[in-house]
Image (cartoon, rainbow, N blue to C red; front, side, top):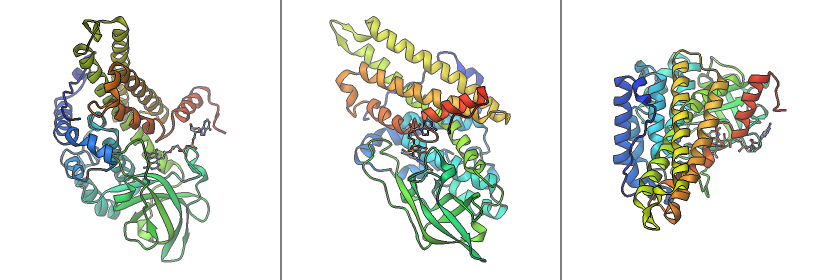
Length: 392
Ligand SMILES: Cc1cc2nc3c(=O)[nH]c(=O)nc-3n(C[C@H](O)[C@H](O)[C@H](O)COP(=O)(O)OP(=O)(O)OC[C@H]3O[C@@H](n4cnc5c(N)ncnc54)[C@H](O)[C@@H]3O)c2cc1C
C-alpha cells in the first residue's frame, strides 16, 4: 500500500468517552502504523515475511504488555488503552496485531498472572522491551476447538520435568525466544510451562503456504524429551482455566482489533466510491453503493459502542468470558462482511495490493477461526443464555 490516506471514522462520537491519555496513545499508534507499517506491509505479505524491524517499534509505542504494571516493564494502562492499541495495529494488518496480542495477552499475561515473582522479574521486562519475543502453545494437530483432549504431557523426573508432544498453528513460533506451553502432568491436569529457545529437544519449524496472516510467522512447537527445569512451571494455575484466562484477554483485544480492519476497508471504500466515476457519476451516487456504505458505518458504529462498553466492564473486572465471546464473534464477522463489500466497491482494483482490502479479507479468515472459531463463540453464548452445553 504505497499511499496510506486512512482517516478514522467515529459516527457516534465514541471519542467523547475516551480520556485525553487514551486519545494520545491511540494517535501515536496510528501515526506509527502510517509511517512504519503501511509502506512495507504489502510487500511483507506478498513475500510472506514478518518484518523484524516492527518489533522495536512495537515495543517503543508500548504495544507489548500495555496493561502489565510498570514495575515489570509494562505500560500500566487500562483495558481501553489496550483495546485502542489493538484497533490501530489491526487497522495496519491483522498479522501485526496478532504478534502484539500474543506477546501481551498470551505470554506476558500468564507469566504475570500465574507466575511467581522470580519468573515475572526474569521474563516480563525483556518481553516488554521486545528483547525477547514469546509464543503460546495450546492447539495441537488433533485438538483445536477441544483443547481438553491435548496429548502433550510431562513427567516429573525428581529435579526436572521431561516434556513430549507437539503444538500446531503457533503464532510467532519460528522466532520466539520464549514459549508458554500448556501440557498435562502425570495426573492429566493441564499446567503451564515456560520453555526457552535452545532447550535440547525443543524445535519450532515454520508453517509455509498460508494465504492468510502472511505478515505473521506461524509454526509448530515440537517437544522431544525436552528437559524443563522445575522453576519453569507456572505455579499459580491448574487446569484449562489457565489457557482460557489468557484467551479471554486476547479475544477482548481481537474484538477491538477487528474494528480497525473494518474501518480501514470502509474508509478506503468510501474514498474510492467518491472518486471512481462510471456512467458519468461517482459510484457513490448510486443507491446500491450508498446502501453498502451506510450499512458498513452502521455496523462499525454498533461495534464501537459495544466494545467500548466491554472495555468499561473489563476495567471493572466485570466482563464475563461469554460477553467477550459475543464481542469477538460479532466484530470479526462484521469486519469480514465489510471487507467483502468493500472489495465489491473497489471493483477489479479491490483484488490488488494498491488497496488493503484483499489482504484484510484473507487475514480475517484466520481471525474468525483462531482464539475460538465463529461457531464455538456462538455455542458459548448459547450455553450462557440457556444453561445447556451444546458442545458435546
Ligand atoms: C494463523 C493462525 C494462527 C494461530 N495461532 C495460534 C497460537 O498462537 N496458539 C495456539 O495455541 N493456537 C493458534 N491457532 C490455532 C487456532 O486457535 C485453531 O485453529 C482454532 O482453535 C480452531 O481449531 P482447528 O483449526 O483445529 O479447527 P477444529 O477445532 O477442527 O474445527 C473445525 C470446524 O469444526 C467446528 N467445530 C468444532 N467443534 C465443534 C462443536 N462442538 N460444535 C460445532 N462445531 C464445531 C469449528 O467451529 C470449525 O468450523 C492459530 C490458527 C491460525 C489459523
